[in-house]
Length: 596
Ligand SMILES: Nc1ncnc2c1ncn2[C@@H]1O[C@H](COP(=O)(O)OP(=O)(O)OP(=O)(O)O)[C@@H](O)[C@H]1O
Image 1 (cartoon, helix red, strand yellow):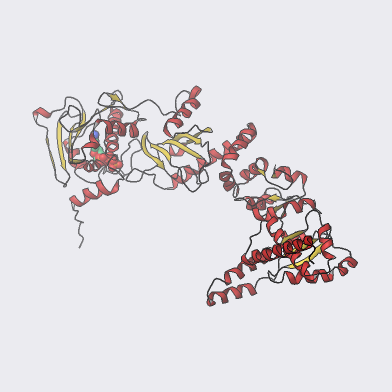
Image 2 (image 1 turned 180 degrees about the vertical axis):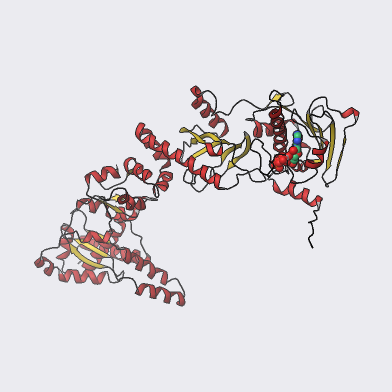
């Protein structure tokens, strides 16, 4: 046995009118939309018919009700019964039930939004048959249809919708609010719309019309609507979606995480001034205004339906932004440089997957290197290998020493930089890239003469035992600059082990066992303190006879190397440095007093 759903009308009206829409203000849009659709339908039949919409707000001379008059096609009594009596029935679908592209409406629920601000909706309508019909709908789901009494006959074809305000909702129907909302939603509509005496529609969109001063118009539009003077304006078009418009490049960096909304019109009616999904995510440096004929709204008409057409449109618009960037690189490289200074993060994010953008970054974005700022292309022209540090700390630790060894080094510690450099060989297979591990530097230092090394053994043994506590290996090498007595080098695995050890001290036994298991599977590298045999200070230390003094001096050098290399100072390091400094001071004071 088959049954039919029963619908609780009161609940349905409440659901649609109160929960579908974000704010009661959309009632103005829904009324405008119906009026414009009715005008469009009439002009299909009578191309020269008047195309006017006139709104009389409730605080005007109209006895406390709001009226919307249109010169549209009107409805016959049969149509009123069919279209206004069935929720979800729309006169704007074709025979197969698809939304007809020339109309704004399609769902057959828009009129219900008026119940957010009105207790009663009256539709007084006259179609080409010349008879005026009166439909009165109530918020509880009741409605009446009747031929209009003699005093309420329309003289012209068209429709008047009258809203009797709900208590506490009167302010939504006043002149100031209605004018503002009609202008917000309808200023680009192709039909003349007046609120009281004020015309709220104003000609074609700013990106259409005379191309001569289009740019000036769009800049003025961005200033007025978005509140900024754009860095540049890019024309947008996507014929498959019937879309045209413009993108404005932001003059200041924007946070990639905070999505900036776009202003989207559908068939010249504002859909949203905070729409998402129109431009690809990486394009966070631009905001756009577009009008589309074929994109679909969600039922609340406050966002775009995320369908295949929107996806294809997003891709097409993304391509147009990319081409703008590429064109800028050829016709105005200094402007591109300016753009990158503001929006490099967005472009770099794009370059992670896009070769053309990677080329752009390579040619135009200056990186910090230990031989001065330069682009990767410039760096490549002078150095065989693009050697880089993967973190800013690593770069700081080794930049000067690497330069003294003749090793040019790029700081790839900022967001995306390491990944971008690692991707360079994908552009050109002959490019060599290499991440420099600080500990690799030691392998480039010169060993010292075996005789000297042998003589320094007692010193090295004393030094080693002085640094037994931080678990640091002491080695003696010769390197430049001579002014640097010691260098603290830590490999990635040593760094990892050290953070494991620190964490182990803070967790309970069960976790400690897990950490031990991890530690046992990582190589047992130790950090190194590399003493520089070219440094006069180190040589003098090597000849000291007093092991206690050697210990203090080596610990002092250890602390200084940590500080110089921007390494973290753990409590144990601080204690070591403290005892070294105090011990050395004491010796110095005693020596001066001749007390020894
Ligand atoms: N001013 C008007 N003139 C002529 N017909 C109208 C007018 N207002 C509403 N209608 C008729 O009433 C129907 C229902 O209107 P409603 O606003 O509820 O839905 P819709 O416009 O079809 O779709 P949507 O829910 O997307 O707005 C419309 O399809 C239209 O046929």
